[in-house]
Image (cartoon, rainbow, N blue to C red; front, side):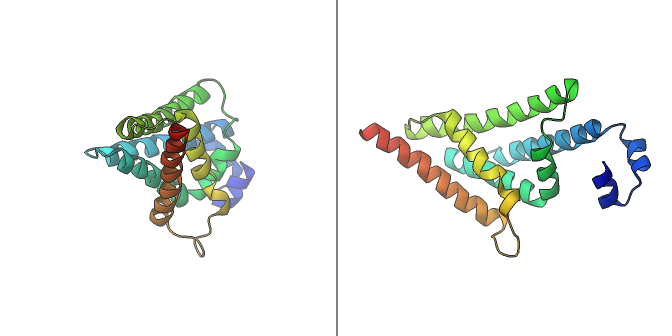
Amino acid sequence: MRDLSRESGMSLAGLYYYFESKERLLYLIQKHTFTTIVQRLKVRLEGVADPEKRIRIFILNHLEYFLANQAAMKVLSHEAEVLKNGFASEVAAIKREYYRICVGLLDDLKHDRSLQFSTRIAVLSLFGMMNWIYTWHNPRVDADAASLASEMGDLFLRGVMAGARVRKER
């Protein structure tokens, strides 16, 4: 809270006037973040039938939000375990929905392309690739969200589709 007070220019007392605790503030940040990401994704996926395009939309949606909100993403990554009780369960439910959307997208690709791979490992690998972007992305050197999403999408999809074919041929 002291860091936030210093960065925002608001007194510590002022912050506690609006947010009764650090936990409440973190809850509101997380709830807003994950709700926004899920809502934007659902809108973007409407009317798109191709499973590969839908996964690419998922990646772009995720990276655009993460790169536009790097400070919030850093807080969420490092303070994820702070939430307790009802705060934690509500945010966890939104995160599960987001995870399940990704699982569904990959299952659709598997069915459409007759692929065999572990959906769980693929989804968690994709999140691992995308979620750490806040630690290394430098806008002066690195590409924008759309270019990164295209490249990450290529890497991920080629890997998933090539790996699945190799296992089938063995």
